[in-house]
Image 1 (spheres, rainbow, N blue to C red):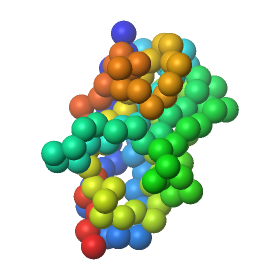
Image 2 (image 1 turned 90 degrees about the vertical axis):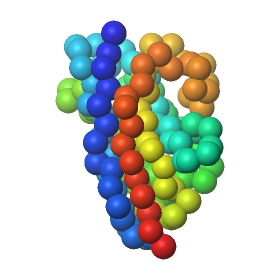
Image 3 (image 1 turned 135 degrees about the horizontal axis):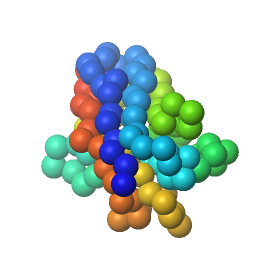
Image 4 (image 1 turned 180 degrees about the vertical axis):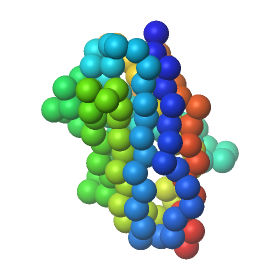
Length: 124
């Protein structure tokens, strides 16, 4: 089992940047595929980005490509989401998620563990 704790959210103006972190407990972090999702009020939770075990494979939702970068440091049991050129429509609660087995990073039901979320608010 793994526990996930997100941090780094906050209030930022449009065009600004934030870096989210997700710290995982345990000694088996490198055996988990990781993903970031977000949920705005009234909307379903949606995929943002995913990363493979080694970090060699990264995957993004179309609207964040070129602006967001997912990365991981297996020695620090942490996955990151660097968010640049933020827009008001990026406002949401951001969640990290973990899974031992992945066929499609964008599917919520493939992830077994979720963090509590961190709020990101982008003002116009």
